[in-house]
Length: 183
Image (cartoon, rainbow, N blue to C red; front, side):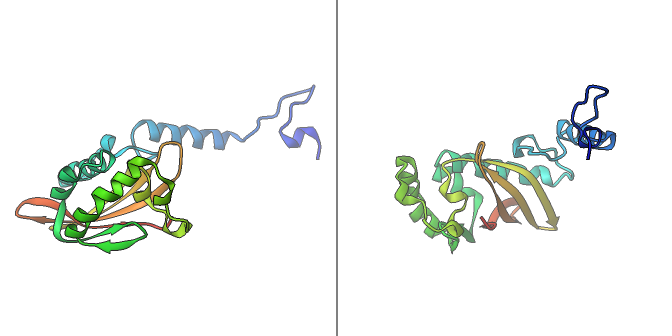
């Protein structure tokens, strides 16, 4: 292979480091990001695709804010009384159990004691991050039930999938299940 084929600069001419079609694809990707079509769009900037999504987005945004501020009083009204919620190393707990367990867990998180973080990578989920941003929501609605998938992202760090199941009761959406994706 000579310098012409390698993409390196030669004294006779400059070879493009990538083909024009790749440049076009990069332009389209950047344009899509600028228009808010994915590409790490925070949930607060997401543009709903259906009118009912406008009812669900505030629930997800409030969940994010309550969680990031360790505010159990803001979090609990978002959760269904008979729901099941992922906690710690992936155990499923009720709303009542979460209400008892979260204050102590969050107090340990705020103290930044490393003993809170599990040693097994398989157990590490978003519960162990002090805060994060929900991004790139995908919301599917079926009558009075909905499923949402978001990326929970720690700034300049990893991203984890977080799944929500919601139900509309008495005209109000509430979260009936949360579950972290694989870490």
